Picture 1 (cartoon, chains in turn yellow, orange):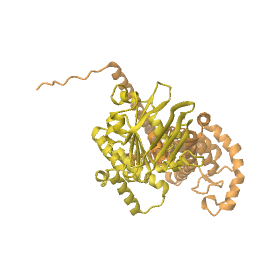
Picture 2: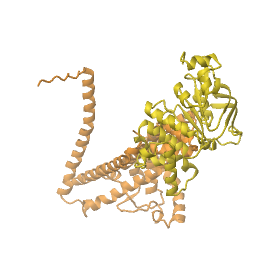
Picture 3: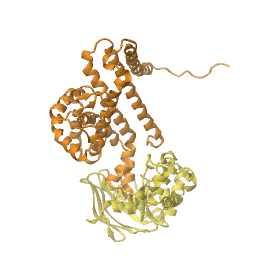
Picture 4: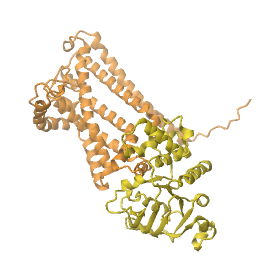
Length: 259
Length: 308
């Protein structure tokens, strides 16, 4: 399953501080949408509103509408826990649970929904998710070993396996390669491209080459100055944003004139 | 062949500090060795001297009830204190709002500062009479469970009362330590759990508790250490007898080693003093064994500790 996400004049706050102002956009299913922009422009903040992780921070809130296949994610009787089970997330730094084995890490999300599963079922899910994350061949002989013993790139793919094991509709990646070396980065990028066959993929990245390499759509965010809210400046097909942007700010950023 | 390796620069500050740290470390070992040597040396006359009336059947049958009492009282105390301490720590670290958590944190620290003799008085004068009706109820309704069987103590000065007093005494240090551990759970792991769709409690089960496990064990061992050695409160509250009994509601309870030493020492003469010191040596050994077990438990899963 893969869902279309629609943001309608979304404002994101930390207490009284408006961090991201008036974002309206449609994120297409079965595609990679990249959020780019300078530090502090609110792209990480915005991606965290898509699975309601933003509100984990005290005082953080959202105004406006966020629809997932037409359903209001911030509706009055929507449980954020339910939302997060449909929207997987991969973080900036790999964060497998250090106290769990590789296998338990993969199953950790799945177990939340299904406390009872047979051994065969568990093995099948583990293999499927690890194959999906291009990690199976590297770890199949040490599934009972701790996840923290893997390399950084492997850990990040383990986190992706953990996210896709629950078969979500959307995968959010918040700068997933910023802590990784170029080879691990390439592995994650290839994986992201494979993932869009099944999921809606949203990726925040500081790396413009990465955005141009893998994404179908690119959203450029910017801030006018510190203390001011981040805004969506331009949102279009990736080729267009990188080769022939409409806005001057976008052009300056993608051509490396600032940021 | 000449040595061409450049010499490491030795800075005065580094040398001074390294030596200071070294002596601080050694002083611990020296103190421990001195205490152990004293206990050993002073214990010997208990076995070589003339027979002692109090231990007419030999040292081991003399000390056995006390060993039992010591361990039993501490285990009861710990069994009550550990879940409570985890609960308090979780509440302070993850549920209470910041201001209230601070107040609660101070209150817990304050509890740790109360001298044990005050706990003893409180145990006799307040807790024992207060618990008496509960003990009767437990005996009537749950008397089929062996630990609640027997003739209920009229005064309430029983093993269970002592266990509860000990629990309250070790609670602050345990709660404070565990709270610190829980606060150090990496935000990254908590968010990983939440992003998977864990509820707050599931997040705690997935990220906070496993991460804090070695810390919880360490805290429990510190608490156990204090409970094992606690003297005044036990000596004041418990009505002792030289028996080995699991019943926690009766007036014949096994005394603890420390309390027995405190009660007997003023009247002890000759090599009876040495006998008491020998029981102290046994307490020393118990504490060491407990700590070794704890170390082993923690190291057994070091790979999964989250420290790497």
